[in-house]
Image (cartoon, rainbow, N blue to C red; front, top):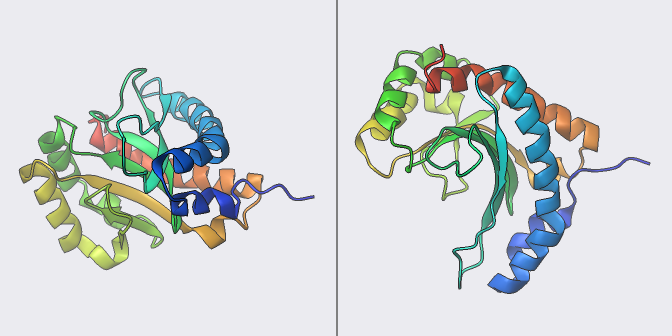
Length: 209
């Protein structure tokens, strides 16, 4: 019998009314899967050789009223905290799953990161057509890199350098209806492929190459 990594209830968590009820469902259904993914990809990324990576499952502990509209596990080269560092994320919105590299607004090195990426724009634009970019981790929408083109990527990088709240997310989205049809093995293979193709970009971001 085929075992599926994701089920419809995982995505439907974000339709549950009320902070307490939604958090309870997240903790029961989704966070154990994030723990598994976090450990798996922390080991895989550590083996890449740039740093030792650690998983950080989003706990949403600062929320007191509004329930989260998305959730994730971040994998970063630090035991405590990840938001100030370039990091990987695997996460869910109600509509889709995302696997990304994230440089978010807390990162103090955004100017240098944007300049390194500006010198290597072709690494972004040569990613497969299924890869997407975004400038805001608070919004579910993203643009396919093939649609953004050089101009769109360069505008995102300029904004990353000059706007305090600007961000850069690069990776892959997977519609919920496609994710729930993937077996355990198929999903892990999809996620590994996604992150492996993002690793050269991560190396540019951190100044390794």
